[in-house]
Image (tube, rainbow over all chains, first blue to last red; front, side, top):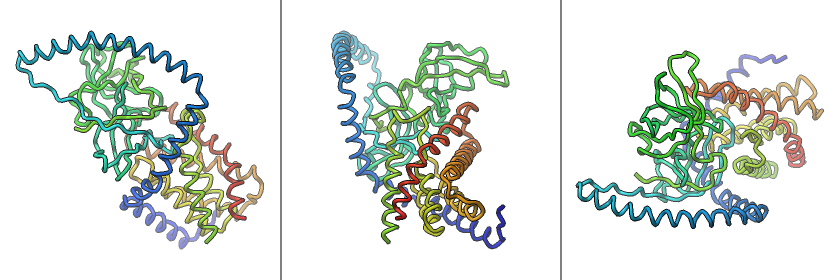
Length: 257
Length: 157
């Protein structure tokens, strides 16, 4: 059906190569595109948020009551824990432990999501101007979210932990068994390279390992929900439910190292 | 000039819509590729040069918001525009059903190309999720294409 002359093919290949080369070697376009979209994306996400709040008024009211009760309970627990914390500080000082500095966080709001289904990323409204740099880690109050891969002046791109190109060196909190958690674009993550005799079971908590060069140690990744054997039979894998609901994430904190 | 302004405005509007696509309208975590529909539909309503340049712009715009550094959509959108142009000179693409079939095939091919590129870069994607990402977004894209066709027709005057 298609009769392509050599000249047409060569012309087309040249144009395609030029386009690919230009787009690869000029991050300028990416930055300016993101800069152009930033103001109206922020405005639209704000409007979307307000509209959702009005539409789901009743659901929000019930949720508010529930959270109010939870906050009361947590306040009581916090009071008890404060006592334990102060005792801990006293004992640490006695033992001469170096006090670990608390994490410095930059709060940010998600303004856009990945435009296709083959990657899992979000764009946040904070960028280099606010101190966000590529390589920084993003969390929220529930656990690990991902890491910053690009940052322009006023926004940054975060690769979420369920992206298949992610690999997070992690451990099972209970048994300290190591493994590599990677995304699969689905709702769950997969912890791979577990030896057949690995001490792991459903319900175990997975946290980041100190072997990770990117993520700080001890960040909550998720909970094991299933364990299986790799096709080769040489190792096992665990299906991990992320602690964070990645498909509906709205706010994140970027950790400043 | 007026055409170009309208095309650019539509590109920005569709890209914005695709970026903020509501979670409640996502089926199995899939959202439609509005930029792809627009790039292909331009071939049906405008001359080839305009369609090709706008297709490349649509691809660049999509790639700008993806984590991948390879501008795969820029190249693939240009290829789909060219192939659709060639096909429309061989068969009649006046019928809307024919256009829907073309969009479905292109969406499947585009998803297959991006999926293969993702796999070849070492990413681990289970077969079930690969098939889901191949089929559901393509069908979703096809289902929404009549709306984008109407919009493109309006722009073309």
